[in-house]
Length: 345
Image (cartoon, rainbow, N blue to C red; front, side, top):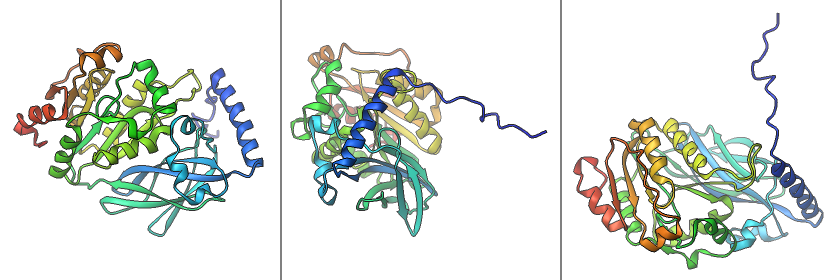
């Protein structure tokens, strides 16, 4: 008797009504844009990799003819970034070291793919292209197999001051503000620069519940304020097969678990704030993956910031690892430096 594939009879998940509506609207917009002569263009994000593999992150958009020949479409800000038209289900060619692989952009135009390239440790580049577009370079930080330490950092209210009510934060970031109007959290860039200087081979991962639409502006903000370069792991606001909006908490949990699987030899410094669910998420992760955590550093919000954030979200989900708290980067540096066995600073 022929052996049956146990996965062959699992039905495709039924999409949430909102997801089906979103798909229909997107199909109409995409068809109109293609008839109007718009062309595909790739916005590449910083990825990361390990021994024999890289994680490539990018987004495919439809842009006006000629825009793909400049960096203008990477500088789209505010509401225009949120309404940028993604190109779904298109083949994307990825090249490096004379090898080529083809992946497919998802229903939001996002490319998030593991590709079997063997690149030297440090910052490298792969080339991305789609039919009808110019190739673009995507930076990739390849982690040295000997590296034993890395940093995972939240963004909003951890490295960047928002001072907005949480329900309005995502909309403000997407529709209104550009990186020139954002302020860094005092001392955090200096703290991260000290860590990067002490651990030059260590990866920096910026993990946020923000949408991919905001990635170019957030990247410019980090660079402008002298934060170490690193990969940014964002999410898609759109509905999924079973819910109206994606869960930001689930996104962070999933990415942390993934990092633990991909880099079992690395112990992470987890940096967040006490105005969201960072303490809860980090505590859960540290208890579930104790060998993957070096320490947890929490930025304490001011009274005004805490009120706007809906109050401080102190969690009882702590771990055996060192935890430090301070309202700014200088204080966190002092707290971390006071524990010499951490070897963070």
